[in-house]
Image (cartoon, rainbow, N blue to C red):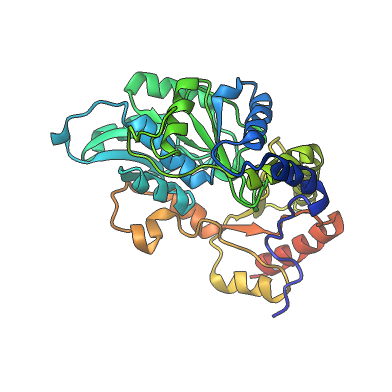
Length: 373
């Protein structure tokens, strides 16, 4: 089978754009451990989020950043060792890395359903679930689904009311997410809108929280070489910082490209009553993931029929983390919205280089194939 339109074809800064930063690495002979290029990345990200550079730390990848943030946050919540498992609440509608981070931080996951409009976990759902947790909840990790921004003030308020540590998985949310007291972790993976191949960063308006996360990604060191807490090695290298700086240079054009792809899909599916796309016309955030949602479940034979016509698709989060083989044993609420989305949601091709004509052709194949079932 020939794939004319792959679901993803990332484009990072080219060699010429990265080379000036690589030459600086050669000159500095500084390769890791919070080098000068990493410091410049953090300063530029701080400007983007309108915070002090002390309120940003880079990480090796978003999963390590989430792990470190949970380690840093959860340990500040005092608990009795006889209270049973320390639980972290998280949405079932997310990528497996969210749950990987919870386990790596030494917490027990409890899966909750998401809101049917936003596809995100809500503070109200968390508060309603607190009495059902079979142990002590100490943290919650809401997810910005496919980059859709969360109401960060509401999550800060939840943390203040309940005492729960809040760590936000904003892996795909670089464009429109806002800084808050609750730390948010972002990904710089090759598939994201701001891409460096690998890497990530954490942002919080509370500089002390960022200090604690930085300690957790640096072996527990803080100003000396004495490990003072449980920690990991999760630092960004100068090489990934070089690519990140080149990506930041190109960000205005990159955002324009992804915004154009989203508008092309919205136009191509305009008027369809049984199909809609996310982000929709009223959404104003850039994302590298276009999701098609159908009113009826999408059987595998329908997906294969689309792919046989040269359009690759992907069920990005499968059936949600509760359906992953490794994680079926973990406790959860009933998950009707997650199950509904998993059966009806599929990713469409979205990458730099797609023209409006390409998108129109993809939409015609998808629409004809799925609507003719």
